[in-house]
Image (tube, rainbow, N blue to C red):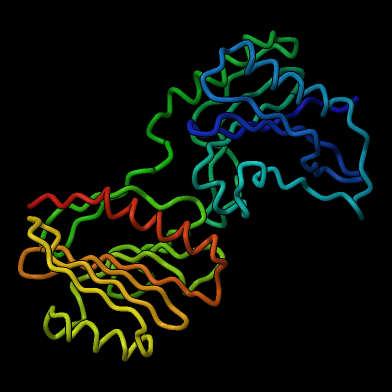
Length: 299
């Protein structure tokens, strides 16, 4: 029989994904196989442990695979995420593996490539090979509880050039965090389906004057003839102007916030030719969600 091995991936809003493995013939490598086990969040240690024990048993009894055709099962897609590099940003990983006749349980770390590699600096927990489901489940729950600082960063923030603190809800997993994108931006999130579709927090703004005419003129220079355009000034303490527009190929929206002597622009650009109508609606709704979550706290 094979040595026992399983991996567990956890996000509070989703729950647990537990993967068994199979060994490749004439190789030290293993690959993830089906069935992958999912366990909802907030279950007790026994139910979680039973899922892990099931995966360990599947690995122990798995057939050895032909390395020419063996391929890792893309378990991250179960959570509706298209790439492991995105999944690994928001799911923590625990390795449970048989080593020298005992079970070693330890949290894995994420490499900048997006893969889980090695383990954290935490000491592994060692359990008897025949540990009960509740023992294994409790150990995993304890490890996840001890490192609460490594949670999904649903709330993001940054400090503006004027020293004000901006916080907001992070867009969902379908948006890739490219930080400042090497541009004059605090933060940019690019949609995974199209790199011309994004939500961005820009440093100041590129307009000579923040007026209906000036913004319209600049947008038409950048994006082409506008077939829709709306401009609205507000009386809000921080939000000053809302602008939206549409060309034959782009849907646009910008919100301008007071930032000391400057204005911070939060904008979205949707490439209509690169995204489906369903995705376009989702992005528009997500932009509104981000906007509604923004707070600007004066320095």
